[in-house]
Image (tube, rainbow, N blue to C red; front, side, top):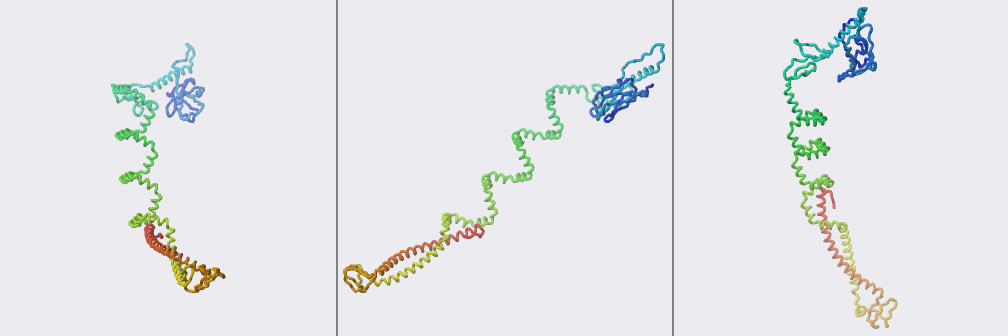
Length: 450
């Protein structure tokens, strides 16, 4: 069998496949090394023959089939031929000519050459006299560039070729020395790598902070107030949402400062908001009071009398009725006086002298002082002087009339005095009523009455 294929490895996606064919010659299954390559990380995981996979070698053509126990999503299957660097065939002297054995020996030599070439292709090599353009199956050029003094080898920006560094070795040594001197600080940073990464992710804000260093320093000097702000975050956010009104307050700072200076009165107004709202709703009457300040001040100066009137409002209200009653009593008293005068004229015909003797009209007398049938008994002797006969009832009536005349005279004098006082009280009530009427009209816009 000849060796026409110079391939000695394969890489196949095994995300769904469980069997993979290969087309190069191996002498036994152990000469094919199989592993999995992670598609994302390129990490290699070796597989074990007869545990993770089995191999069937073709007896007709070069190659065979790899059978996996399971598919491996996200992985490549990588298989490479690796035979020992030995020649195990033994051809006896003067023996027969074993064609198959001799062919296998030649095949092995060719296969070993291919295996060495594969290793050489993946090795770093110096460039020859002519530039080489040979790359591996991944397109990677592993030939080294022409050496340059004080330069290092490095991969280019595409990661496909090795090039000389742009930085000199002495410069790198200087950087290394500075790094070594800062080793403690580097360790500190390494210990806080989470915060460092957070800073890296927040580079834009950090640069903004660097450009605003003076304000940041001012904030540092005002740490206590800033901490107070942090503790009052809800109110601060409320202020941010109410920025329009706050800006209006700033523009009106003079009036606001005046309010601060007068906060006691403002607090008093807040506590008395009900009355203040009532005043606002009654602004018309209040303005009327302002316009009538002189009368209101007069009322204030006469507060004692007004309070007295309020306390005696019932008496004042009844004053008119009392005045009418007094007038009626005065009329009745005048009538009584007229009647008494009439009685007085009638009684004038009698003249009582010395215990009841009359010298006007003869009266009947009885000796011994005994009276009968209701006749008057004159005790001063038994002489009769021609008096008319007067009954005892008549004398009682006369006495009652005398008492009535005296009472009427006394009542008439009292009623006359009361009538004078009532008349004066009426005048005062009328004057006070007019004042109260004007006051209430000014307060209630003219709707109140007394």
